[in-house]
Length: 225
Image (cartoon, rainbow, N blue to C red; front, side, top):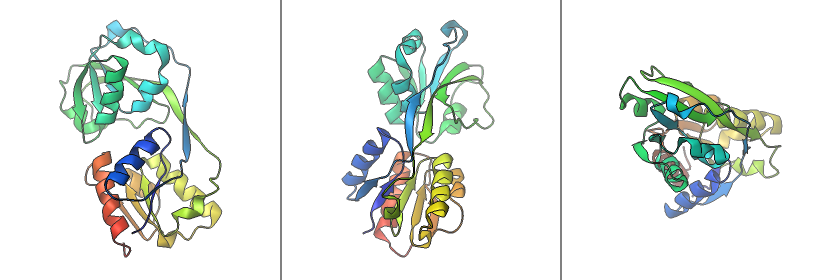
């Protein structure tokens, strides 16, 4: 069985590794980014019908100003994000399991939502709601990892298009033997971002952690892909 390389920043990397071990996989953590809070000005909560959260990093990095929004219902992408919101004292009204676009498609169209997000936010497609995005954290690129060559012959889990692009950049700079490496990506956009010279690059059936790990398990167990 091939090892599974996890690129996402902590603490998400360790959470993914724990889930991978439960599937019998052998995870190796090589984070490419570090989550950092950024200064932000909290908008008036009375101007919004709810809070849109697409990453648990927003809850972890938001600081004490988050408490201004505890009375707003939360619409969260993913159970990990929802769990982090509940632990902070938020009431989670909706949990989506297939990405932000599907979540927004399940909500009333006349809502005005405050999206506390990262600096590298993907604009939702065809959102019927009014969404005000306020970046409160960023994913800062880390230096070239000393153990990057461990991806050769492994399966790499790519959680975002930005991670895919950074992986491709580092692979070129380091002259990696990437034709022996398979990529399991959380979305078609993330799969496209890694480029075309890998042994295999495939997107998960749905843009969530469970589907990504199911794909990664199949690739880890099948060295010909």
